[in-house]
Image (cartoon, rainbow, N blue to C red; front, side, top):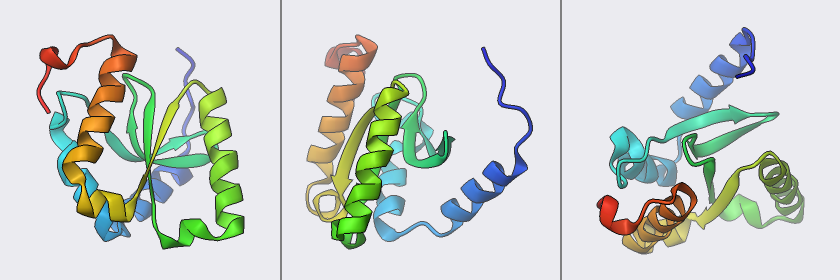
Length: 130
């Protein structure tokens, strides 16, 4: 395994991002933390290359990104597309969830995430609970 070396700025940036969590991120974190979703471990605001993933399951290499109203501007959409390409070429599966979808259909969002995690890990839905 390749070691990253000491990079305190990444740790500090992750801490700042976690402390400035928006409502949707807080809602999602309540559902993903402590292996609550089918036993999969997630971390939040995890550095991946030059980016910070909103939520990352390292075991399955799955990134969950939450998108709000600011993600509809042309510049933001271009940034998100570049970020997704980088993550995918780095071997990650990226799931994008709109904040409104999270608020109105949390159970559906969680089922989708669990399904992807089960698919990637080779685990069937009967092996864990949602």
